[in-house]
Amino acid sequence: MKILILGSGGREHALAWKISQSDLCEGLFVAPGNGGTAEIAINLSLEVNDKPGILDTVVRLGIDLLVIGPEDPLVNGVVDFLKKESKLKDLLVVGPSAAGALLEGSKDFAKKFMLKYGIPTADAEIFTKADLVAGKQFLAGLTPPYVLKADGLAGGKGVIITKDRQEAEESLEKLLRGQFGPSSENVLIEEFLDGIELSVFVLTDGDSYVILPEAKDYKRIGEGDTGPNTGGMGAVSPVSFADAHFMKKVEDKIVAPTIKGIKSEGFDYHGFVFFGLIKVGEEPMVIEYNVRMGDPETEVVMPRIKSDIVPLLVATARGELSDVSVTFEENAAATVVLVSNGYPGSYETGESIKIASNNDQSIIPFHAGTAQEGHNLLTKGGRVLAITGLGNHLTEALANSYRGVDFVKCKGINYRTDIGFDLAK
Ligand code: AMP
Ligand code: GLY
Picture 1: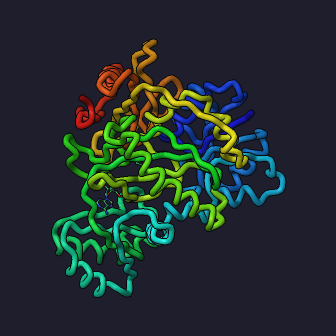
Picture 2: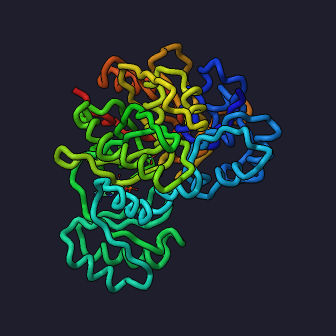
Picture 3: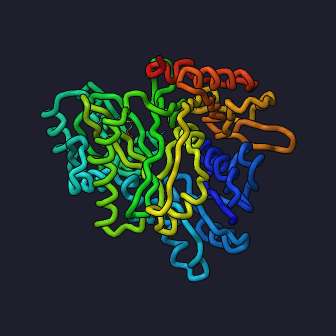
């Protein structure tokens, strides 16, 4: 089976790493990929939103299975575009159609979906450009902190949380005036939920589903969860506070009703659902849906899947998920993300990276923003590497991850030294 993965981050390297271990994988391509995927697959010079280019590539290479990593092409309808091509009728695709991808592409749409299917989430009101005065009045009636969310995709920067009403009003104004272009012409003002967050991942064929190992990511740039939000500075799996009793609630109150909703709405949904959850008291609530895997969460979830992932992806695409069984490792995984100096603000790229070779099976250096240029491995993004460590328990996994960080030599690299410390015993 020939498999193409779209994307270029740590998530895609981790997916490629897991897929490449399958006996069913006879050819693996990543577009555009990174320096790490180049070592285990063939990188293609093809952008994730280039629909005609993707179509040509799939035909030319005889791709059997396409796995779409990031949200952008999904929200832009790449799946709908490919599925209407008669010459691609046998192509297996992991990724939802644009209608289903709106669960991530529009926070207003997702909120209405949750209300319709009785899925616990924060109360919210939507405001448009014309409603600025009404929006400010609404803020005046709330108790802080205030939570404002751009309706559309904003590269992870569209959520503003502040205790200061004046700042909230100013943020509302900036958003509605198009701070993120059309993505912030509508803004959700939401009740603040106080609790601890976790990420739950599901593969679904739009009817059945498989729950994958859960994870917790560390979004803030600074030690002790301080400073601006990033794409994610590290992650751990499993999550100690998500015990069997809690996960049963997650399945019954959130996962099952979501999949039922997806089916009732008639979405062509064959792919991942990433539930961004918060535990409030003992109850899980949904903060957001994503229609893809998380990054860096994939870098701790993939190593914990024991089964061959290819039959699972094929069954997802074919609508045969109820026929497959999947097993998970009993171990723990942790990943620490190495970022370019200045990230999540502006940063330099093109720094040389050296990773000392070692045969330690408990350390997996996943690449994110790297590029192989000739014999040189160079930095190419804000998040550069995600060093995953495995262990019998979280403390050991974290120790291995940080030991792996020491194998990396790169000028101007930063990382958090406290990933997972809140959960490790
Ligand atoms: P999102 O892009 O929706 O995941 O939001 C980014 C982050 O903002 C989340 O991971 C939470 O830490 C925080 N957040 C979003 N919505 C809320 C809320 N209603 N209450 C508390 N924190 C929130
Ligand atoms: N790590 C959070 C995300 O992938 O959205």
